[in-house]
Length: 184
Image 1 (spheres, helix red, strand yellow):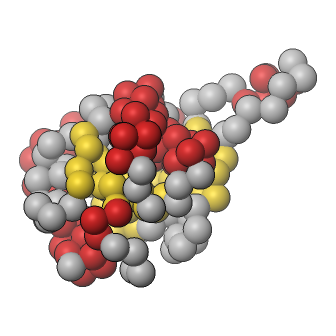
Image 2 (image 1 turned 90 degrees about the vertical axis):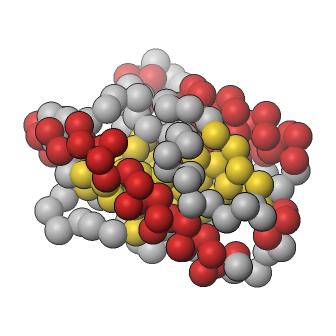
């Protein structure tokens, strides 16, 4: 990555997901959910004026065989009634392309996905699901700051999602290693 690490803003929802972010990187914790992620990210961009925002965190796998670390190329706002809003004559932003991604799609919503039927419905549009990625990407888009999403699969968006506290440390280590490899 050809950006000065001092000009990078790392954004994570929780302290546990950011436990292994290298100390020399600027870190902002947003808390969980789209409103918190968008608000805190926008304020941090205004304050720090980064050249790049990296949103790191965990995600649920929406499809069989999806595991590991991903850099999504597309993020969608899965719990926005975009079709209904369009039918009313408005054009909501419900998808954002992310440069430098790996071809995967991330769905973001305020719904903590534990139901297989809900998971399968969201899987029609995405490979992964989280609760902050779209909001961070939208705040970056509006501020004209490049953004990358870095997500590690923590569960399969079913009952296993409730085991998140037991697996988050291992996921955080993967994220920390990725950051060290990319930014030193």
